[in-house]
Amino acid sequence: MALTLFLAGGGLLAGTFGALLGLGGGILIVPLLTLGFGLPFREAVAISLVAVITTSSASAAVYLERRLANLRLGLTLELFTATGALIGGLVAFLLSDRLLAGLFAAMLGYTAWSMVRRAGARQPAPAAAAPGVGTTPGGAAPGYLASLGGADYAVRRLPAGIALAFVAGVLSALLGVGGGVVKVPAMNLVMGVPLRVATATSNLMIGVTASASAILYLLRGQVDPYVAGPVVVGVFAGAVVTSRIAHRVPTGVVRVLFVVVLCYTAVEMGARALALPVGGLGA
Amino acid sequence: MPWRCRWVVWVPESGSGTPRRVARLLAVGTAASVALVAAGTVAMLLAGHVPVTQPGPAFRPSDLAADVLAGRAAGFLWVGLGIAVALPSARVALAGVGYLREGDRRQAAVARGVFAVLAVSTAVALVTR
Image 1 (cartoon, rainbow over the protein chains, first blue to last red):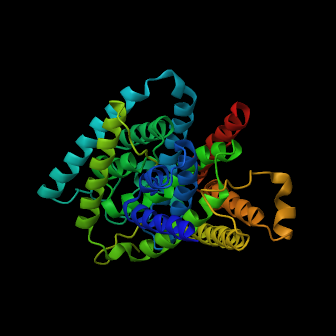
Image 2 (image 1 turned 90 degrees about the vertical axis):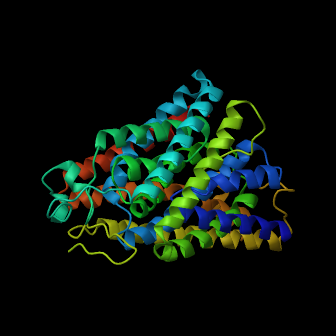
């Protein structure tokens, strides 16, 4: 009984964290299951992926209902994230995991520094939306890029965003991360999407990225239902409650938490690149 | 019309009901999934199974119906987890159909593309497992 409650409690924490920051929450679940409960890494990643999907579905339902997540933008980027994940999965065995982890750590460090620098200077500068952009019924906006925008922001640098979404997908497959740590900064810093919309849209997208891998783990018998059950129930509770109160949390707090997660992930990736013992990831 | 409040930037898809339908699918699907998983977890505890120390039963699609009818934990857990894993693909398909009905062919094509990539990923997983 105690073990079940601990698993559910860990899931609750991960669901809360994941829904708030646009991550899956695996960044907490994998270390919890491997270091806290002694599960094999692969089994922990498998359960984490199912939890990531639950976080995504539970929080995205609320964010979509409240028109906070951008479904059009999410679908567009998902196309390239999923393609990247597929290609990453196919070529995973050809590339050096340590080299990729080192590059990834450097990129995360740079992203964290960029977010801190932006916060000190000004709010992320959303490009002004043209009148009527994104409001035409049926999405029949004058251009595809324009149709992806929001009420008071326009999406910019779509090719760069697509490239980063592809990279997020490749890294997801190669390194076992969900990609939220790449998607959120890509939408916020590169594409000019407000941070709150970026985290909500990332929450929506993460489910698709994780589901492709989760099917594989499930079919290979890596998911232990007795462990996954309590974790999923806890994650659901955390994600539902957090997604309903997330709009009350100031953007500055979200930004600070996200930078902390980026730094933690960068350190862990750096340790993996140097072949030091690490807890594992699954965000 | 687009509008905003103090903390929330609202994304306008005012002419589209697709996001709302997708939201309902996700809400209902997740609730059903978690209800089944919670029932399975309770059944697991009542049967005296301890997670982590005792490995759970393997995924056998042919046993699912019998396990659920017999009230066994494995049946509820696997059906619930299966719904959870299938939900993202289902919502991509629903979004594609929704945008197609609204005459937004570009967005419908994007959704079809995402669904196709997921289908290929699943096929690759089945072939290489």
